[in-house]
Length: 536
Image (cartoon, rainbow, N blue to C red):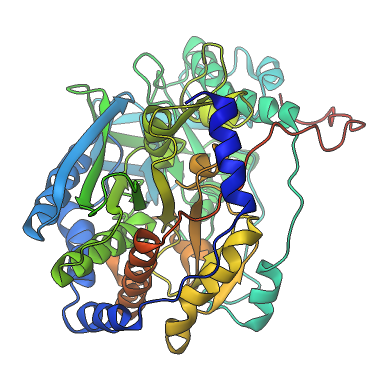
């Protein structure tokens, strides 16, 4: 279908929004019974967390998760279970690591190797130098000073003691703030600046190597001895040339204080990590409940299966993956015969730039831009929505709705309408049976940062649920305490039930959900000047 015809058809759908469909309360009752009395969601999340553990894209653990989740889908009777590959890069995993201060006194430090940095090949011992560098212009100050040193590249902070409770449930005031239309802002120059900041990491690695540094370290961005270890140079030929570790904020600041008054402390680092180049493709996992009308298309729910490595990937996003899988189990156990196929997706590469869902969009829905995209990794993710025109793929109109879960294990309290007012009355009707379970809110707001983003960006109705934050953002997200202990099983059971009902309603609607048509925006503030102090 040509773009003009495709978007014209979508415009008609958006203008002629269907009236709210009456929810089938009998089916809802069956979903609630199956999802409470026969639930497998806690067992699924526990296996992903405790037995498989952290699932960095293309790591051996991620490969185990890909195979195990497919086996579970087949065990529960789903059809068309398969995985679909896309170009990614190197696998990487941690066998063991140790960071110790040996002078002026011995202390075992809390630290973690930074993802996709090379091993130390045994223990290295060297003094530290505090050399904060966040832009290429900072290199001149440190030329000739880094030979044989472990370089602390973060500017030491002064502490970040919390001023509000770490654990939170949403209340009425919070819902009111969410349900506010915020005008979108379009500033392609700002996107270009963000891409350049991520490209700085490659230049930093080359500079440190050329100057003879033996390793580098960064400060953790949370207090409380939490570490994270994110790294984004995973492409073949792009990985850092020397070992890197992230050190807990309290330990990092201690090292910086000692180095300030001198002599510089000496560290021992043993980073026993491994690259896996056996397959540079990453894989999304899919499974279906077939629809009865082959011309009606499909609805889909998804969560990202990959995680970072500091914890076990329990809340981010083992919890969401388990709820997606549990919704599939519930509907399959009920023997539903939906009008549209219901598809379940477990994405890879989300943590490196939503790459799995982007690959799906480009292969099955639409591409953006007419020229060659030479950017890679997270830089490509940042620039993708600035590329025009949108060119539909043959299956562009087949996906009738997409629902995403990716904010930990908190109870679903409602859903974001993504600035699409036509879906608000529909979603309110679908939530009505779950008011007593705490799911009541439809917020007009747009959300970002997870796998519905690129579907929205090409005009497919993709949505993220509102969830109780719990301690997800305050301490669990990406951190070393992202373990099963921080999950709430009752909340995940509720979330699986609400999701299953939404999927069945969307699959049985007479018409697909109304779409919001993307148009190339004009720059929001054409008179703005860039900040000359912003790192470039």
